[in-house]
Length: 255
Ligand code: CIR
Image (cartoon, rainbow, N blue to C red; front, side, top):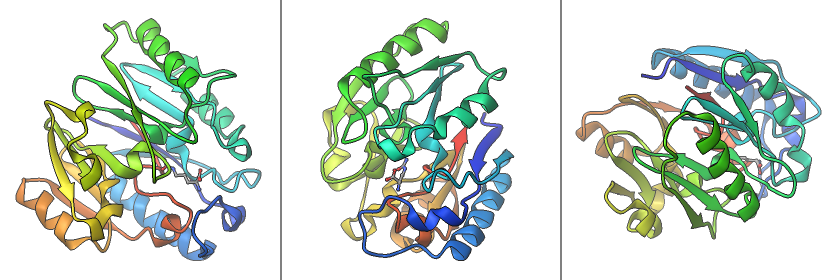
């Protein structure tokens, strides 16, 4: 049962967030959407912890990338994007005392958006942001500090999108939600893979809080598919974060 979420408010510098799109985010609208997102987290039953905006880091609201919480451990990431290095310091400060911490260090890079913690395995995207050294360090960190047997870790090559979780997310009940090209990936063998329609690919990044799923607004087919399976779906508008290649998982750390 998940109880907490950590978020960071988007600041004025969010206008300069890294983006593969030509569209510039509207900061005031992003801030309003972030407030709705926080309400959805609270409606899903979470206590929402809020870090203030940090104007040094335009992408700082995407806190998911700064840490991986798994097996009772928080692994502090070393972002692959140079402009994002340093974001993790305030997150580490917040998490220290709540979790034993491990850290990804040079030459490793790892961003939390590449890490899917599923029922019996951890899947890590090897992407433009996460390298083999980062993945190897994550494996060691989870084995050292969790007190649990290390779950099998699979490295999954990521192509055509930013992070692994841009393409697939674990939504509980042994189920993965994925874009069609990832739905039958061998890393998901043994899990139930639900494919989203190509025109709803952005909805593959879904945030599951137990049986509630926070989904980007505007994806009716994915919403109905999940509701038909018994999930409570909370659609939230995140258009301004999408302009900066972010989705609903990117905006929080959940535990
Ligand atoms: C970046 O390029 O780093 C940000 N503009 C977007 C990060 C999205 N994070 C995520 O998917 N976990």
